[in-house]
Amino acid sequence: MDITQILFWFLSILAVFGALMMVTSKNPVYSVLWLIVVFFAISGHYILLNAQFLAVVNIIVYAGAIMVLFLFVIMLMNLNAETEPQKNKWLKIAGVIAGGSLMLVFIAALRHSNELIKTQVSMGGEAGLIKTLGKTLFTDYVLPFEISSVLFLSAMVGAVVIGKKGD
Amino acid sequence: MDMILLAVDWALVLEKTLFIGFIISISLVVAMYATYGERKIAAFIQDRLGPNRAGPFGLLQPLADGLKLFMKEEIIPTSSNKVLFILGPSLAMITAMLTSAVIPWGDKVELFGRTISLQIADVNIGILYVFGILSLGVYGIMIGAWASNNKFSLMGGLRAASQIISYELAMGISLIALLMITGSLSLGEMVKQQQEGLWNVIVQPLGFFIFLVCAFAECNRTPFDLAEAENELIGGYHAEFSSMKLGFYLFAEYINMFISSAVMATLYFGGYDIIPFYDESAWGFSTNIMALLGAAALFVKILFFIFLFMWVRWTIPRFRYDQLMNLGWKGLIPLSLFNMIVTAAVILFLKK
Image 1 (cartoon, rainbow over the protein chains, first blue to last red):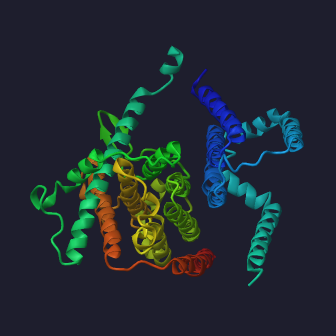
Image 2: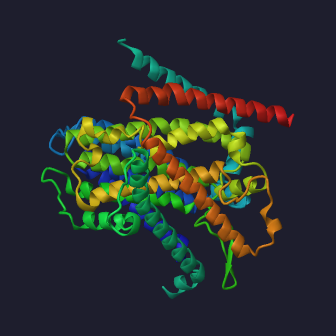
């Protein structure tokens, strides 16, 4: 085992453990904090893959912005272990089935990941660096990129419209 | 396990460890004496003497304050969440320290036949890293505030968090304009460009101004210190904290100030460049002396910014909360968007 492998196993165990703790924690605030740990572990994986941009953006967007909003809502509603309602048994089973199907889809998609490794190697291991990423986004994938930005804009306008209701 | 140990460049590890220790102790000492500086400057502005009992000119005052904080009784309220109550101040301190990893503190030094870079990690996404850590700074405050189980603390924490999130946007957009000019995200690269060309503040004066205002807000400094508005919220988010946990929160604020001054000096004022419009290599000093002079120049710039932080604090009164949000969302964000579009247009026009 070299350093990379040790790091990989450490991060993987951390990610899985964090995810389990996130699901099983009684206190919603702990759940959010464990989810942040999971995001950090995943960012660590990105760095191992030399995708620094993805790693940092993952931290900025998910750990830094979205999770803060989650924390906001939970703290303002003062949800804690005592107010946590007993969930329906069927709801739990439905959750397991839905999560399991998602896992199946992921495994099916990643079964052929050997080919992805080849493209990464053919780019000298620099597929995740910001220069390569920017060039690809603005040459090969301009249209999808722009369309998704329009989608974001419309979501923003929608949020403003909903927020304005009642004035 | 022996195989693993052999694969590591131990000299590099030792070098980096020593350097990290050095930077952390420098940050702590600067933060410590920033408290002294703050009280002296406040006294000067209000026509008082300030601390002058402990040691000559009161220079030992920060040590006395630190000792006092350490010796105070450690109180953890019974209704608080104990784990998070301790985690809060620790996180505040850690996130305050983390940013110093990517700041280039000086040029290269040659010691014992090794070339040592005075930057802990020159990652090619340096500025994004700074941004990522900045967005994590909220957690220390929010977790501590919530764990206190006190409504006033929670209010202070929520104020701090929403303020930091709001001003981050304008800060990011003002940085995009800067990035379009430099074309690089690495802080080391940016300093090198400024050494050869102009300081960025000359090409981006509006961007710098927006960045400065946002930095004040991110550090929770007056006029944006609503998170600890004592006349509305008793003490703000750290109302329930005592002893060194309170000390960590107060200390983290001063370290944040130090680090954001360093970031501003690096991004807009040439970092360790000594004199603008001038090639210092003409002086013919050796590499080591030049590196030390550069680091000293960076420190002078940082100290100036810290002074600016304090000057503003003791001159301007606090905003009202709606004024603060209006300034952030309706004032600074459109202004930084305007700055970004003008910069992009000028770059396109000049390159034609």
